[in-house]
Structures are given as C-alpha cells and as structure tokens.
Image (cartoon, rainbow, N blue to C red):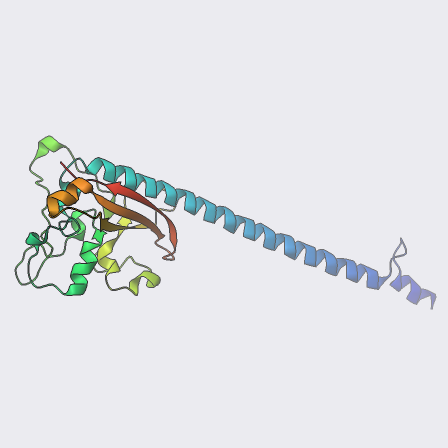
Length: 225
C-alpha cells in the first residue's frame, strides 16, 4: 500500500492524475499558441500583399497620367474612345461591348483579325523607329492564351484579353494582375469630344495566385494631345 502511494504522489505531493492533467493543459496551451502564431504570420503576409498591391495600383495610375500626354495608350484603345471607324472585320456585340469598357495597356494585348491580318479593333501601334521619343516603358504584359490567369479568373472568357500581368517595378510577391475598366463621360458627339472629356477608369489589382481582388481605385483619364 505504501509503495502504491509513492507511485501516485511525487515529491511535492502532486498525484499522478494531477501531473497528467497539467501536461494536457500545457499541450493545449502550446497548440493554441502555435495556432495564434501561424495566424499572425498569415495576417502579416496578407497585409504585405495588400501593401504591395496598393503600390502597383498607384504605379499604374501615375503611369497612365503620364501616358495621357502621348498617343500610345489612346491609340491602343480606339473603341473606348468611341472611334468606331477603326473597327476591322466582323465583331460580335459581346466583343464590341468588352472593348468599349476596357483599356489595354500594352501592344501584347492587341488581337489580330485572322481574316484580314489587321488589328481587330483598329489599334495603332507605336512607331518603334522614332528613337527621338525615347524608350517606351511597359507596365503590363498580356498573354492572349490566358495561361497565367488563376482558375477563378478563367471563368470569364474575355478576362484573358482584358487582364494583364504587372511587369513594372519589382515587388517581393511579383504576382499581380491588372485590369482597367473604362467608361466614357457623357456629352459630346464624336471621339474628339471623348478625348477632351476623358474616361472614367477603374484600376483593379488581383492576386495572380488566387485571383482575389486586392485593391482598386478610380481616376479621370483625359488623353487629349
């Protein structure tokens, strides 16, 4: 009997049951601490991702303001500027609607009409032989196959034409997608008026990994030159 009591009690008088209970409580506490630590790291990563997405958003906005002073981006988006005379080939109503309400920001987003060999929406490419204008700095690159889009963004068949990958200033995550929605301001009668009044743009930044919308902003873009 005395030997049994020795087994049940330690030097300080704690029973074996109390020791086991204390170990269980400690294990639960450590597991909770590990979970909290993991959640904190996830939150830090998400905050970092959103900070970088905000940087990308502002970089695109500033770049567009600068490019409004030249013809480059305007010439890639004649339909958004209501210049319907530029259309090449037969286009569906849905195709036209998509290009009316989106900007592309780089020549890699230009679609070619296979029947005519001309740019499908009348885009005018830069004169690369004009060295006096300096080097054109691209911020977005398109892949018309949509290979870099996450599954969530592939559901819309037009996203591969309207969403490009950010290739500007390098960020730590280096995996952001850019979409620019455009709405012509009301009033006026022709494309010259649209240039003067400008477009209301919404710049959307997505995660390339998940397709989640991280941030967006709006701006008035007046490409008169």
